[in-house]
Length: 428
Image (tube, rainbow, N blue to C red; front, side, top):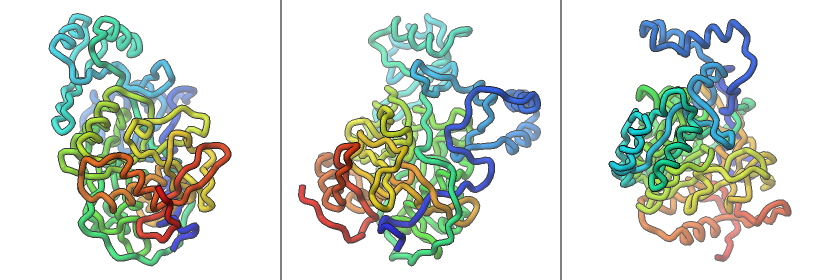
């Protein structure tokens, strides 16, 4: 059994020099040679397809597969008034009326995309902002002209953990496999050829880019923590089935609120009871509506608190009412130094967590991303199918399986270990 009694083991490996933290540089000094390469990549659409693919394969990427070059990123992304990343020149209309769309057209907004989300009873329409207008100014204009409408940015969400790791050679005794449980996951793509995941029952669907799902370090690591059943490594629910929604797709603007809403719709349609979201970002009206509908239909969302530090504002979707927020502790049950904490009642091992590296081997990773699967697995074992259950009942179940910890720097929280682990029981 791994040290600390918390589960499969230690933080994730990088899997190669192209991986970063998921929060890569967005602007700033770039050499002329890099600028020239980035300029070529920015205009891939003008190149023959073979040449475009050759260039795109050589782009350095972060732990969820997004290009990290600041020039490429600045072409596609911008910042909102609070400094959060958004998709440049796009605004989202949430279930707009015909009157809302008529106002938008009169203001020279153009419809880029319609996404019907029937399992959530929502519609998302992506609008292109008027020419020569900033995204911030465009949203302000639209809200002023149509105060009854529901509009927001296409906000970007990032993995809630470091992409850095160090190798781990530790092996484990594999427990009996779990059958009859299906989990959901919203993250990056998965390397299905990683030895611990070969033969796993995983259904992957991409909600960004061209529909393909390139393997990513972050997605592979989270999947391994949830369901892997290799000889050298196993997850918290080895052998369980996994519906994995890739919301990055290797694109610069992957991980948007629209991508996540589409993923939630897919998981709700397939009646996945419990979904792991190791991503974090700003509040967003589309994401809020999608999460609320997802929860109201009897599904559970377990989300990472983020790693912006103890004084940082809450991250979403973890901070939405009804979402089970998870922060990270070390093997001694001390909260991780840079973990968001005050919005969460639950914690799990998220420091030096052993998980799968790409393309093979195992590493140790740190972040609330890697704590979240522990809680997801506990809820999934308790709730194998969607049902309208009082949130209090789910929390009560988790508290009974957890250890209550008092921290002078935050309110008391409950630390969970892997499912089936013998722990002290707490009364409700």
